Figure 1 (tube, rainbow, N blue to C red):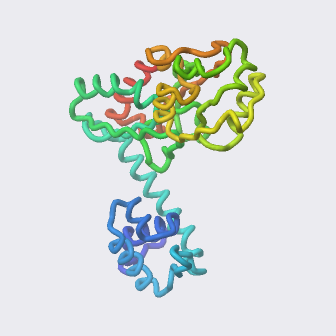
Figure 2: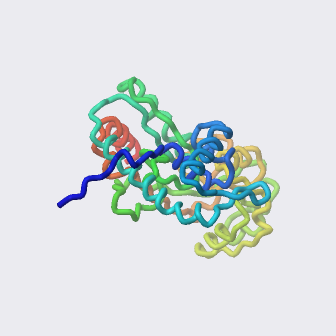
Figure 3: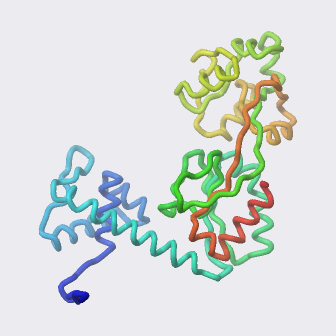
Length: 297
């Protein structure tokens, strides 16, 4: 026989637990407030109220950061499980929506957001004016399972079974440079001639060196002396004559201020359109998903 729960004995405020969880993940009240869209004092009050309700200290201050106490660490897994349940509830509710209005969050790389998405956004605004679109232009991978975005355009297929994907048309990335910059170099006629050039990089990791080595081109740190994590900034630096930039071919070929360099040095770029399985049953997200698939496929 199912035991009846004593609901009067449960006095629980999910907002307080959410403030506790995000503070534990972010490390400060101010960072947690920014993540939650709340003020720092509000988050602090919610955590303090939870501590008073539970009769335990959840954090202790270590320098400028907050560290979990033993009691806080013990409770964290329980609160995290509650957050996952709340997320599943939200996903399920969103998936049941038949409304053609509301917000859809799309995340894609900076170049795709800047050069491929504008016509899709324009057409969607004309055909479905009640749909609000939020674009997250970032090369970082956003977590669809945690609702950081509704739809993602990525270069790798998803691994989680709750994510669905559609393969889009592959792209190719090639090297481009301004004619003025090329005039400062010996002729670049073979891939090995790239040792004389500087190539714009995202960071100081060996990733690009390893990538060129895989193509049979041996380069070193001296070939990557200008770092810009933002790909659009790299592209402007390239157009301004700073160095070579690896860019999707359709973007590079459409820019009159640069020319392609060594067409045999190219990188295939697979593209996937990804969403959460339950979100695909939402009319507004399906409309956006299908519009992206048609435009980019």
